Length: 154
Image (cartoon, rainbow, N blue to C red; front, side, top):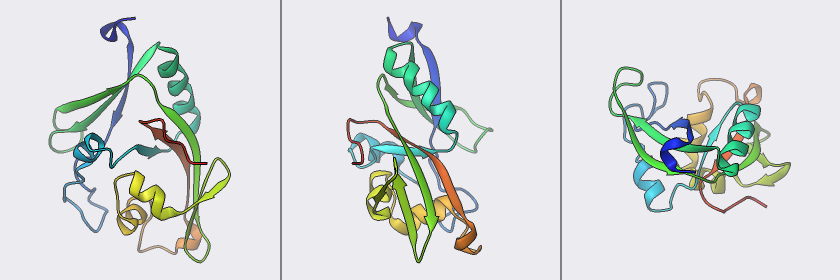
């Protein structure tokens, strides 16, 4: 099937850190990190939705289009910078237990490794997913890792 005939799954990535982040407004450089192989996945909520999309992408019925806003989110054009015809999906859960703990498909993975592969430093990663002003014991994240390469956590 030709690329232009495939349905599109759009995945927007932030080009700047959000207003709620201590690094608000600073460039994320996700596009460049992806191109250099320094960002090999992204993390999202909506496990069921992404599992369904990944199945369609991997079967050839759909393609994943990576985009970012050129300016303010929802108030600017989107720039498309990559198309993926194959993705990997793994479940991820992050919670606090004397430090942030991550499990991928039920296996403990160092948060440092996940942050690095997501194109962020550990503190940037923690601030991206969790409110640094709130008690971490009451914060959790449940979602999926969407892999752009053949790498998987084992």
